[in-house]
Figure (cartoon, rainbow, N blue to C red):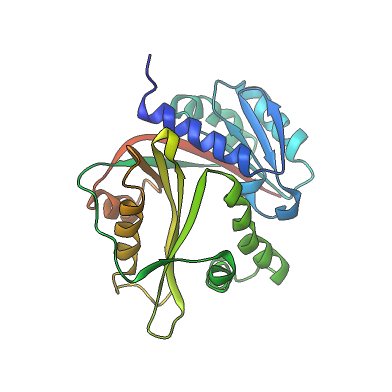
Length: 253
């Protein structure tokens, strides 16, 4: 039976997490991915559940494979499995958030001439500033590590591109990642950010239209959004439709 879009997306996300990790450990229902170089990044040190999982065992399992870290993160890619494990994890002190999986349909977009691909070194100052804005109390070492952890994503897919727009002073003011697997006809838009004090200039629209054009040969283009508030409504107005949910459970020591 052909895989559904949600199944293809879940398989892509699980594969991306495995491929960008320095270490992987198989666990019931999924895999633990670890990258010690970026120990402060939950994205690069977490458990990914892409199958059924024993709810009662998950808190202890997370302690056993992530216990050397000050944080725990468990991402559950299937909506029903996420709902099933939620009571055990929240009882163990985890916060629970849902993610909206959205797929784009409609005509291909035209690229915006303001948008260019950039290197990690070009993008780094902008991401450092943004992490500093989000985490004002974090020390410089944590901020640097979170910004530098983007390098691990280069190994996650066949093609990984970073798109950005610069303001009139040449400062990168908005950016996003695009991950592509051309042979599988699937692509992901990830981390579309407009820097503080640069909103209202059309930068996000410019990057989105360029990213959609860039992924034009992919039959399936998706992103993951917060289900509440304006982001999912903004994406919906630009051709993205919600097709499912995933779940993220987090604990901070």
